[in-house]
Image 1 (cartoon, chains in turn orange, red):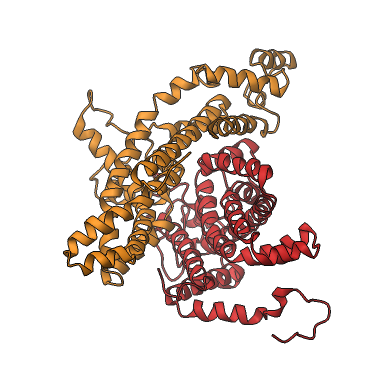
Image 2: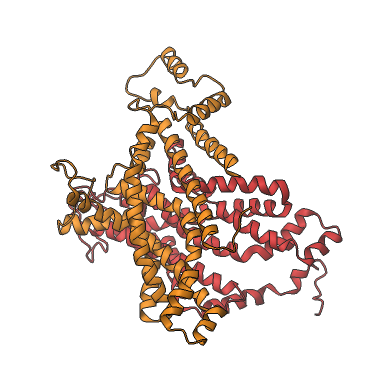
Amino acid sequence: MGLVPLLIGISLVSFGMMFIAPGGPTSVFLASAHPMSPVEVAQIRHNLGLDKPWYVQYFLWLGNMLHGNFGYSFTDGRPVLTKILEKVPVTALIIGLSFVCTILIAIPTAIYSAVHKDSLFDYIATAIAFIGYGAPTFWLGIELIQLFSVKWHLLPDSGLTSIDATGLDLGDRIRHLILPVATLTFVSLASWIRFQRSSMLEVLGEDYIRTAAAKGLSRNTVIFKHAFRNALLPLITLLGLYLPALLTGAYFVEIVFTIPGMGYLGLTAIFERDYPTVMGTTVISAILVVIGNLLADIGYAAADPRIRYD
Amino acid sequence: MTNVPVPVKADADDLMPHVSMLADVWRRFRRNRIAILGLVLVILLVLAAIFAPLLSHYDPNAIDTSIMGTPQAPSFVHLFGTDDDGRDYFARMLYGARISLEVGFSAMIIAITFGTFYGAVSGYFGGLTDSVLMRFVDMMLSFPTFFLILAVEALTNNFSIIVIMLVIGLLSWMSVARLVRGQILSLRERDYISAAKAVGAPDGRIMWRHLLPNALAPVIVAATLAIGNNILTESALSYLGLGVQPPTASWGNSLQKALDPDVIGAPWLTFIPGLLIVITVMAFNLVGEGLRDALDPRSSGGRA
């Protein structure tokens, strides 16, 4: 398994980020409103273990991390892992919902486009895909807020719950989720429609499709039973490849709509120079991507009997 | 095959006149109307960026205090209206195009140069070198790239345009490296490479003269697509306040105040920069896709 070196590399890069900052991690204390004496700074450096050589610091950090201790946030002193884990469900909810929406829209659109290649529908779908591909996620979010929240007062523009909501109000939650999920869905649609369409076109050109049509099977049987199932295979790979982008997209959506998820946490940490949280978010994002890729590989092998991993 | 009477160069690839290959690509590219639309848009954008001072007599940073605080809607005086500081938005968008294109091109050149070199070394030497180098690429690709760019940009705390270019370029070369490696891997087993090795050509020469030129087509496509992606990245960084800093105009940082109370009644202030980003990224993608079809001799030149 190449997984172990991969994870070690990820941890090294995440750890290395801390050393890019001019002045190192303590610069945040030096720049604060109350200038500290060199003695105090040295004391803080000692408390945080920053006076040790970098490799000692790295192995301490790595060892702690393997025990589930990602360190403590510089800003509120809470364990980083707890801070991140409590945000994962929110991010997962947004990604999950928009992924389902994307698949439900993209696959039928792509199949219709491929089967009716060069039709008006195909052109419009391709054009929309190109636009979605070039549209910044945050801009789409802003425009949706401009229309649905500012202009028409239909949907809330931020957060996951209304301020006056009591307990978990499902209708309220859904209303808060519509715009963020729609934003992420639209930007994802582009890749999926294009990919599924070309995959379908490729399969439709295969000999076995011509054979199936030639032996008198109905058009629907050929399209759905023979072509569609084979055209779905490459999508499993795309899922693995697309996960980092999906995660980034979700982070943007969280930032624009002020939704307290991992992206919002990570960005706030970046602004506040909360190094342990930044490193923790980076490591966990990367691990999620690695797991996603692994699942995609396994899924691919399970779906396609021709693929075998040794 | 006649030997061209140029005494100094006698490599195999010189026997094929380069001009005719380019002409061939252009002939196929030209037939693709959508790609031509992309090319026209790109040329217009580049011209607009170069001749920005001629296209608008407004200074993009000049504040008109008489209309400060109340953004003016687009009119003949101010084509794209004014922002909440009373600055002419058309001028700001023109100068913003400069930033976008500068960052887009420069970061692309950094990423392509580094990625090509890295991928070529990895593919050419193979074995352990290849395993180690590609493991590193796998690892870098596991990070959500934008988050990494964001974190590095924030931690370096330097928002000069050079640093932005460097950070974007140095964190987006991985897919190019993978691409070039794949090309080199398949090319290096060809007979003409064995022939070059047999006559004792040094590694560097084989790589430069025989491998890279033949691996170039997909790199050119990737380079074109990368420009669009870099422009998106720059705008996102600037939107978050971790890229081009105001008062310098950039399409991304124009969106920073998009949801401020002052600006929310002026939808053109968010719509225009966003639309410009979409058009620009789309234009580069259309050219890239067109090039992909035109450079691949197997495709008939139509759009897939």
